[in-house]
Length: 92
Image (tube, rainbow, N blue to C red):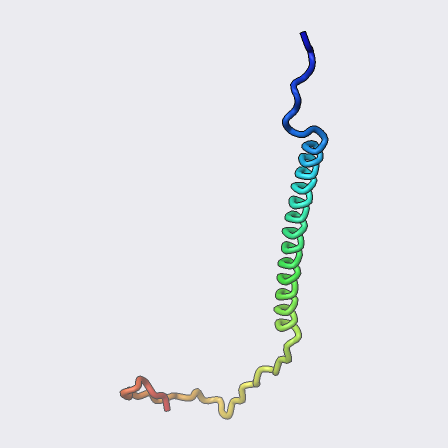
């Protein structure tokens, strides 16, 4: 009686190398996907910060003209006359 193993059909060392390279390739692809996703997230955050900065710059760095001071000619109240026209109301 013979107690030897049947011949392997997978190829031994070559099959192990293929399996190892497959695992390494999957790890590299996974790492690249995570890297690309993180770069896209950082670019999106940077674009949002740039938009927020531009909005703040437009809000606080704009040149403002002072509001005109109303001038009263006389102390009596002014009565306006309104009349109906085909386009709507007109105030004179």
